[in-house]
Image (tube, rainbow, N blue to C red):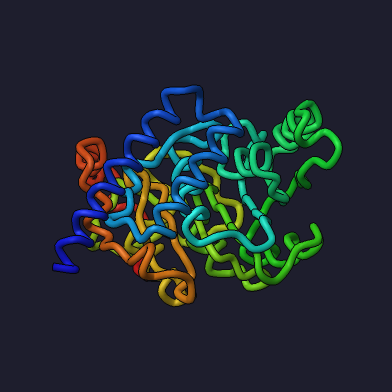
Amino acid sequence: MKSILRRIINKLGRLTSESIFRDVISAQSVNSQVVQVLLMQHYKDMVRLNIRPLPTFDEVGFRCYSQLEEDGILLYIFSLIGVTNKIIVEICAEDGTECNATNLILNHGWQGFMFDGDKQKVQRGQQFFMNKKDTCICPPKFNHAWITAENVNEIIQNAGIKGDIDLLSIDIDGMDYWIWKAIECINPRVVVCETNNVIAADKAITVPYDPNFILKKDEYHGASLAAMTKLSAQKGYRLVGTHRYGFNAFYIRNDIDEDLLPPVQVADCLLHPFTIRMKESWPKIKELDWVEV
């Protein structure tokens, strides 16, 4: 009888939560700080009330400043696991108008340490945050740097950050695997990495290391989701999901709330029709130089 009652309560709680979620979203834009704070509280309430199943990434994603729905997924993740110091390091943030750090910085008061190899983009990014009311007094640190496996730890530490942080985001369109592998000076709780969704789920491969790598062929860059997930395991992380298209992956440190965000399989993240079509490009690049990891 108790188990039956629990299932009924969970179902009612789930229905109520989904109704609240729809009402909040329809009330005004998710760009609103108020809406996002309400969403965070909504997710926290689901955990507190032990409402199961929790939403999937497909149900919580939205975009304010991220490339796709990463803003919503990150809001959801940190609502479940909480935050510590609200520090994010983002490598290859461009000008800050489309990246994973900006929503957390502008709407949730996070400290940002952002890097890009294009000096003009960095200058535009600095101006962008100076013109925002939420960051004009204390903007994120936006640094111009061409990051390599050899200098990444020194550059991050020189920016004033080391040790435990809440989030690391890497989107370099090239050396993503090798940069994350080299990072030792920080210990992020969550990592977001771009991967190459042209590559099949069973291939753990990356482009070879080249500190001067520049993207010249659209499909020839980065590492497969399997390669990044294998590296994450070596570093003590688990894959908890991707956005719908499967190329931006979310990893959580293994000492954090596996019951709330359990590991998922690589193959299950690469099932979207767009991702399946992308794999048609594999024959064009499969003979290029790849490194199995």
